[in-house]
Image 1: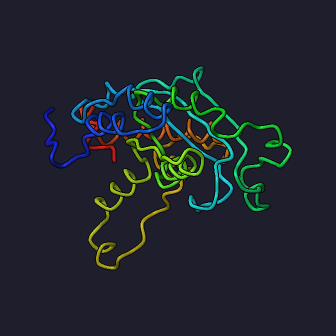
Image 2: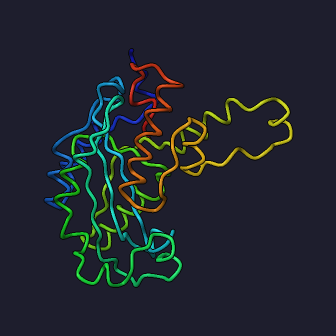
Image 3: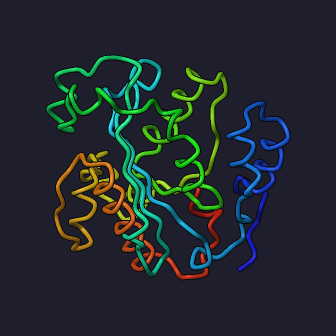
Length: 236
């Protein structure tokens, strides 16, 4: 399928430019691995689901506490290659966040800073398209976390399963719902999964949430897209 590249972000070209302009050796090595072309069929794209647990929801003030990722494709989830890291945030844990993700002060006492696992993280992401459920967490938090530490943020494409579901629900709303401006159904990860008959998982463990996101994308693709849909139509 030929893609009208004027309508979509050309991340392959952006990675070439980012690699040339980056001042940080870790980021240069990441960008050097390149990115698939926007017209690549999704069935041929290497994917990695990514999830963060954080100290709060403000990427400018809060920080990452744990990272989970799971490599996968449209047909297979590679559980044996899943990764999970607990990292020491730059600000103290808030009681509310501890209640949510169950990561305590003792858990982070001897945890490395994000920089200590940055090479491993970037190696796991390199050459793959990242899949998240709500891009304002994973992409923004990683950008801000690196800005604080190395003075340079990271840029990368994501397929956002929440955004895909939101677009689908908006397009499928009935006339009455549109006229009355009725709210869309919940876009929370477990509620999106339930609409596809996927099982309920424990929430707020980064690796489990990454796995849940990978399964959700597989279901969305199977129900609403053909295997040759260009990745440029899905990423942002």
